[in-house]
Length: 224
Ligand SMILES: Nc1ncnc2c1ncn2[C@@H]1O[C@H](COP(=O)(O)OP(=O)(O)OP(=O)(O)O)[C@@H](O)[C@H]1O
Ligand SMILES: Nc1ccn([C@H]2C[C@H](O)[C@@H](COP(=O)(O)O)O2)c(=O)n1
Ligand SMILES: [Mg+2]
Image (cartoon, rainbow, N blue to C red; front, side, top):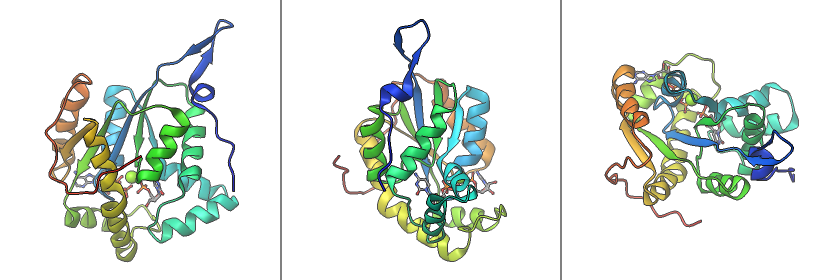
């Protein structure tokens, strides 16, 4: 189904004295495997560094709760641990951003694949300032998800394993892509919540030129 997508200007321009003025918006993507602690750490980052936290998974779950046809489609996909088509995801993300007057967005759980990256770049003509990557061992992530207890339909062993596979096959290549642009900031997310946040604070306290050594992930390169 075609969606009417707004351009970067329509999304990010404010007209406050009769003349169109470009509003500078800073975007940080937060990625990591299922259960790596994205939501947990984003709440702290938002509080301490003044970002607006948007969880893309949460935005999709809100659409499910709305009872719309799109919501039923999203629900089926999520139950199977798969990814929602990017035109749907980016449209809902854009709508959420439009409704908030903020110049600093922390976008949790995005991008998840090459299609997400391309849809976002094509639509907004923007790039993230940097991409925070929470790197966590799979057995630790599985343990966390199985004791999360938030009633999520996708927190069962079968779906969790599928989500891990999607992360390895589809999300890791996006990390390679941003790494080639010097935008990945990786932290060891297998430690305690406080320890992980200590490493994150260092990153958010530094300027945008802060660089980390390339990671050892072996993934195919992402060609956009
Ligand atoms: N560093 C940590 N140590 C132990 N438990 C943690 C840590 N970080 C988060 N948790 C717990 O693990 C569970 C998953 O965390 P969280 O929801 O933040 O992960 P997520 O990356 O957002 O997962 P998803 O991709 O499924 O949304 C939660 O119950 C949370 O309280
Ligand atoms: N960019 C995204 C983000 C999320 N989804 C879907 C697939 C995920 O398993 C689910 C839950 O997301 P989470 O709360 O774990 O971040 O939402 C997607 O398709 N595309
Ligand atoms: Mg989450």
